[in-house]
Image (cartoon, rainbow, N blue to C red; front, side, top):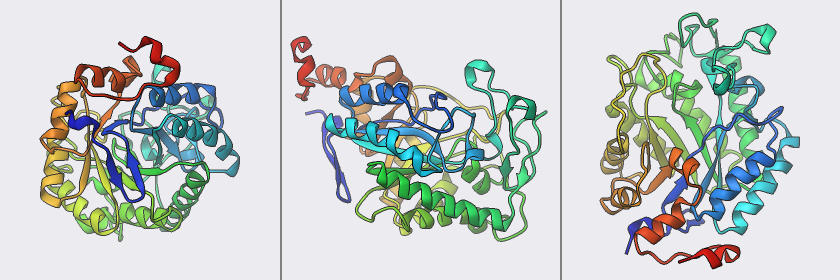
Length: 354
């Protein structure tokens, strides 16, 4: 039997299999509102049989968006269109999740198909925020170093977004602390040069992430899972390492986080990353082995046998599919057939089942 299709229970939620759709920005919202694109995009992956569907990075404040076209959850009016999507996902037997995010110094950019450059004020750009006033890329306008008051407001914003996520029907919240966005910027020594309680030592640099976790927990129900996505390494000398990630995971475990979604990189533009099939899986395996915490593996996982082996070897507890799911929204159904694993198809599609 394929281990990829074993159920997984976390708190009160049971995922029907170990395949999750990784959060992937669509840059297709207006004023943060979800629309028909998001319904069809995410809904088709639920029809395709994934056990967990995680909605793309969803900004907790407008200035936390990567682009002006990111999803948001900073006001109550944004709940209803998201609720429509979560209802459909649940009707297909999948679990809806959402990634709450703040892009930090990597905010205020054009959509990737328009170059992805930092937007100028006349293009609709805005002042970005970061732990320190150091830009991500040469030529970018320097971000504004966050005051302690701004940090306290951010904690409130994450908590309010978590409350709205519950109201919208999500059953998993993932805190985005990876890919060079704000929370990653705080814990990486390559982007945090603060001298206050949020900078300097390892304990100080991880402080904001732990405080965000605590803030989210004030509004997120205890019976529902809480994930954190991290960048397990900066891939740069003097930067964040897998040893740091293991130490962070221990602290997140104490704080009540259920699963670490293990990605990498994104904070340093010139980092040399040895990209290849499953290149980030060893990070998930190391954190799982050293802490006992559940982990998710992501990164060029494209073949059913590859995904199944990750679960069978106990290198991770979830496999997160990203670009492969863009190529094939029905990857789980096709993987089940390839692995000779019985799986329910949508009744509307049964006539096509072989």
